[in-house]
Image 1 (cartoon, rainbow, N blue to C red):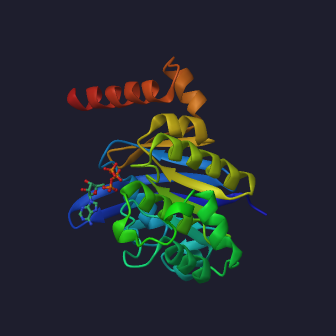
Image 2: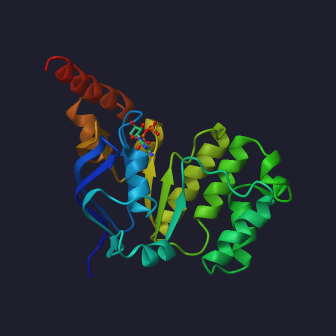
Image 3: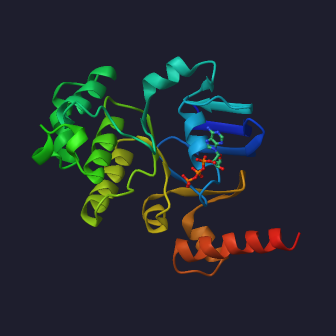
Length: 246
Ligand SMILES: Nc1ncnc2c1ncn2[C@@H]1O[C@H](COP(=O)(O)OP(=O)(O)OP(=O)(O)O)[C@@H](O)[C@H]1O
């Protein structure tokens, strides 16, 4: 039994004439929290979309839970949960109906609907249509929907954007709980404190290439920084400087 859950080898993605991913390779192990970091436009969402079978790779080898992307995406979709960056949900369904839809889709138990409502603190708004909810609540519904069923890996693309500080902390607790249940979490975030607190390993994408795959502690030690954000900013600055000197 292998403990690899995501395997990416020499992955390229081009949109028309623009090469966004330029040969990235990495492995995610079962049960870990793996965060993909990088500046705006680095290719994080593109990577998540390929791993979650929304986009096809231009070339390279991608396997999720042992199945190949894109040929075996049917099998992959049954076993993953996804919270896309642009999650909107079904606007004219209530919070409860939105969550129920995904619980049924992924053959979860009916009781899971109320569990998720309680977990994401959505009790107050459960009968409201998504159309009338604030952005932060809509994101909580998105997170709840991604958790529906008993998925083996969750892809969460900037899940905490727009959450208030209490909800963000609540989200961290839920993510840790999911990890304790053995679920693998693949996260993208611009909140480096979040990445530092949660991640077993982080990967840093810059200009379509993976610059680092390591633990937050190792990256902080390399840059003699006391937090991941400072180390990250040092790293990005050195990459920008070397580009400017080319
Ligand atoms: N459908 C598309 N067609 C053409 N270009 C695209 C498409 N989707 C994304 N891009 C471009 O690909 C690049 C990478 O985008 P991507 O959304 O993957 O970056 P990101 O790292 O997730 O950025 P952010 O942090 O801003 O969310 C960007 O330059 C973006 O403009």
